[in-house]
Length: 71
Image (cartoon, rainbow, N blue to C red):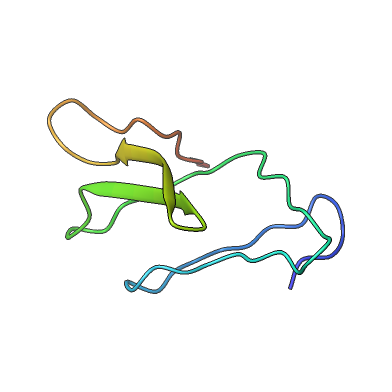
């Protein structure tokens, strides 16, 4: 549960994940980064039952989302 500012939620499971605000609360998503596995091609971002984002994360034309690379 993220209740403080500048907190990070990391999803590593292949089944996806969720981030839910309680009644009367709201969440501000500032950035989404994705490092795809070999099986991933696209990521779908939904709010309630409405798709608000659909991004390519792997393929010949590259990744639409930024990836955090350190080295």
